[in-house]
Length: 261
Image 1: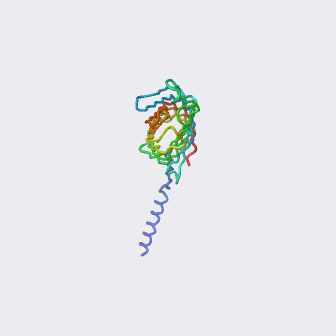
Image 2: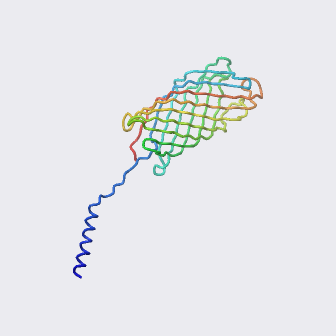
Image 3: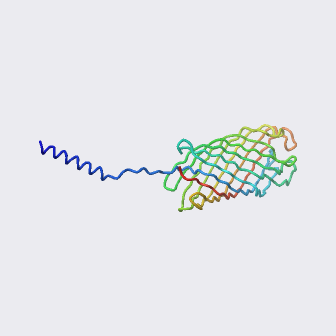
């Protein structure tokens, strides 16, 4: 009996010693892959405008727009599981009136995106971000008889692929497509909106300047396509009208990244 009690006591002592030697588990905090922060960028743009009423291109222009800017704010929702983003860009919107006085513009435009989505770390250094939401663009032409005054509202979705190629350098590719079927504030002689869409492509690399700031340098291509029926904007009533604007932009931005939560 005494021997049994001693064996039980020895077993308990060995078990307690083993438990004491086991290291305590410390949880590792993995930061969210969502790129939170604020970006402000200068976007000098080469603007090309084409109009077609069914007889081929009526007007073309390629003009540098130096006064264009971009602001973007990204944060997280629901315990850093989801992305929320607001993006505003625009500025100077001019074109050379080479062949007609009714189409050139000396105005400005603004584009707003309100997006929600998520980001996933596929592999070390490789992150995919996807989001979707509302897209609206408002264009004003100050010249008499200039480019149409019109606003467009719709939806958009996008995906961004980001890969860190060096400790301080990241490259990324971004693609976006949107449909904007709802016009507002459009001048009457444009007619009836038939189709409106947007396509955007961006290639970019980022250089970390400090733990909280990064320099973004990239190339943006954006195409806006709008078509109308029963238009009289070119002086002939009840005709089809297609307007296409292409923007080739260099993006130079400074991004602020707050401390991970």
